[in-house]
Image (cartoon, rainbow, N blue to C red; front, side, top):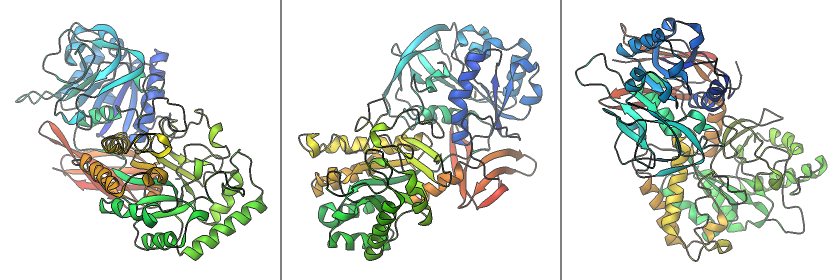
Length: 577
């Protein structure tokens, strides 16, 4: 099977270690939010799950094998019959965790409010979310004291009292917005519960959106409550460096040595006509040792009297096939004379890729992109109507490129307000506004560059993508060598405590392709044989990983387990006791 996971499709998983989401399809607007805002996240994170609807009556047959039960959207709690709630409570009493994504708990029965840690709940609107300073595992990826500002207010249920809960997020008045309820010591019938008291419309991009800084609360809440062992197909914590507009600053790519010292393997986009002989020798040295990847970014910077862009003209006009034949012959000569093989992932100037270039790239096995825009358009014509998998996000996506699905995109960094309108996308390239390049700063702002770099990497990983340290070489060239070392060393220091796998871009691109075609179809724990088994469906040409989670006191530990390449189906078993 070689099917692409679809962002809005419900994928049913069997077994006693799948999550059960309870919806109310009688409330079409609210259930549509589940489909539009939460389903893409579940599919992206690789959760095993299934969906049941309150209209079915008794939920007992669905609940008996659930790893956790989730009230999937606003109004579900109030729509439950007394019998349905008793079934959910009974399931919780034998070990299944429970999560509420219902921002209208204020409408629910008092017993349900109390179950989720609140009492005398009131309707409210919120536009900011504060993360207090606590050590709970659900928020350990958040910076204590950070405040997340929404684009538009959303509805919430705020409790007058919240007894026995750990407050993971609060409103401006200090009232709990996310509550974690741990097991009661000595009570075998108690279970972990989490309530997000605000509406799941928060995950719609017009309100706040995914990859905006709160995704980890979503997936870590589900993992924390789930009956263990539990597994997901989440992306491993990959991290990569991307450098654009390169000609060999710092005496022929000397800056790469500092990156290598801290385990970064940069993918570098070259202005090939501007590279001198020492620079060519340097990139061969780095290439042969696997210390960097290279591809042609452009012939040279814009403004020269002969063609600058390789793959499409800068006004969006396609080159003729004869022109492209000459362009690619020039590239072939460059790579041959330099003694390097270009990366399979193409680092394109202005991300501009022409449709007529695709046959030439396919012949050369360069089938991956790191693009912020679709094929066949110029940079300034790009629009936010592009809807790549999984969220339709311009800077965080992975999936096949239209119209030729032999080409794939893999990108995980914001561009911020540099070149594109500031749409609340967050940190852009980490040296942006931190150097004297283009008069962006009076000097080198080392502290800000460190913060921006670390935040960018953390954002990618905590959102289930990969971390990217991205900048343009012109900004690197504006930084003194000692300051450059201080910045990279400082980013490394800020990432201490995070599990990070430093990889090449090609490794990540290949992984993203396999991940976007694979899902968990069964997750079952056999308590008698102490064996946890996953059945995967899809296509993994290069192999994948899954996470297996265990409860550790009031926290959760994880192990990343490899899966060998497979087609169609494979089964993975691991002892668990």
